[in-house]
Length: 116
Length: 114
Image (tube, rainbow over all chains, first blue to last red):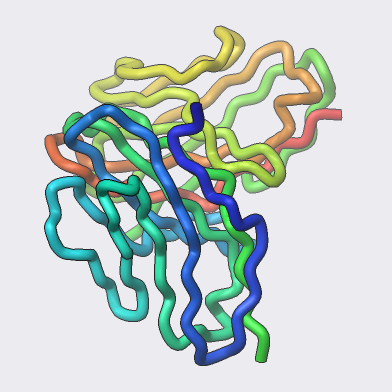
């Protein structure tokens, strides 16, 4: 089974509107971390936001927030007030366990296009 | 403060050749991981180096090998290149420890195998 599933290959949003990018995950570990990265056409993966499995509150970083629903194993990224520079690929990722040696599992990504 | 740097940015090779990709981690980081990103896919874990040893490995054949130097920089070597090895190769660095340290990525090396 896929560890990370992103079901939206492409999304469009009007500038200044909010958009939600979906992510579901699969793990039997109690301790895990969920991450979102942005990948512009330059190729570099840019960290956006992190949510730990034991964090009770949803993570927020500026215009980014993570809608964490543990029972449903979902970790959706919400971008508020979209900007043209938000157009990029977005990847959801998970690291299982508490060991930094453990690998990241990535989803297949969602391509976001912000329309002026 | 320099981030993760990778070289070269682009590379063209032919089938059967060997290639070496290089990575310098972000200052203060001692752990380097390599990922392969095929077109239209998410990154796939190749392996991770810590204290000059391969600590963990993903589902990649032995044609993929690596090295980490005392200054924490790292190399990814791929032997007997196949057409399917064409991909963006991303290097990521982090600090070792417990907890969920995020990865810092370089801009990648785009490898084309003809």
